[in-house]
Length: 457
Ligand SMILES: [Zn+2]
Image 1 (cartoon, rainbow, N blue to C red):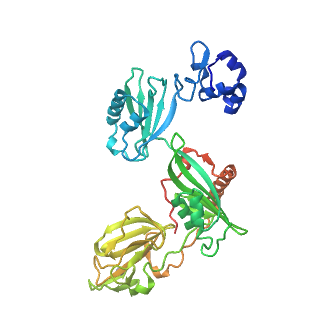
Image 2 (cartoon, protein in one colour):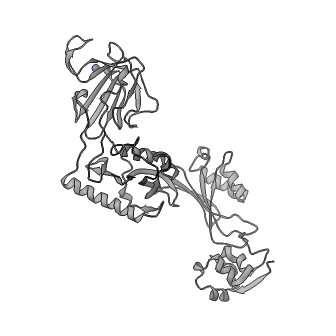
């Protein structure tokens, strides 16, 4: 039904003064089927014909860039068994071009390191029927931090360069209404798993998750993402805010950095902290074999201050982190044998000695949560039998672990409270601005604190 249709560019301009604003539908109404064939090229009508005429026929008009076009961008992705070579071949690049491109890329990056799923953003230009694929450039991320770009030069050769990838920090808001559990509802709404876990961990302080949640309760989560220059999410950052409305009560939690320490606070500026576990072993499996304070050392035979408590338990009994925190020592340490030390918030540390073995996957710097297994009871180092030597350190001094009931929550006051209130109102402003579901806001580059992990008691 498509017949040849010739209209002059001048006429065309007159009819469509505001080309950008003309939708495909408008075009169809304006000039029927022939125009509809013209639609794919509406962004560049003037480049079509040097004689100032636009010639369209059923054979040549269409969808395919049969005539020289504006640069076109597309994403190619490595599937299993693909190579950059096979992708480019499939896309229509000539063998000569591919050989050159591969050689250029290889000079900067080992293509064997490429994994399935690797995406290439390919921009082509001046495609013609005889050569449908004329490369302008290819770019792909070779790490979280750098991008490799291959550019075609005016001489028709290819050049590769590696640039550092500037990621744009973004704030995303996701809301939800509880279906079954908070966890599953939030995941279904698209909240990343680690953000959901963080949200639950911080809400646990202010509400009872076992009994306090009902279908229909609502939550709002604000978290950071890092976007690459094409707006693709490259990384998830930190949870910045979570609110949970159970019935008529709304719980609101803000992430905030106070004097260099990241923590979560309620809306009154009170930090969210949990008490340390009094005994980091299953209470039914252990007994206190040596208390805190002065005692006769069982091996050396002289009086020595015992800086912790000894908890007797069978070799292999699981040892749990006494609180959320970060592992700061993880390795053999003299008399302590296999040893773990964890830093918690507000000046607390806990230490664990004589382990028979460590839990897999942990090391210095690992973040652990309360009750997470960190190792197993043993008698390495200087120990008469299997037990856990357990210490609590507060601001650099050992204290009796049995005296630690609850770590005090910190109420910000004075200037600190003023700073908190300012940060809080910034978050509240973002919440209002991001009221539409699943919207994002760009943050200034210095507004994130992604490198720091919050340490919650
Ligand atoms: Zn001991």
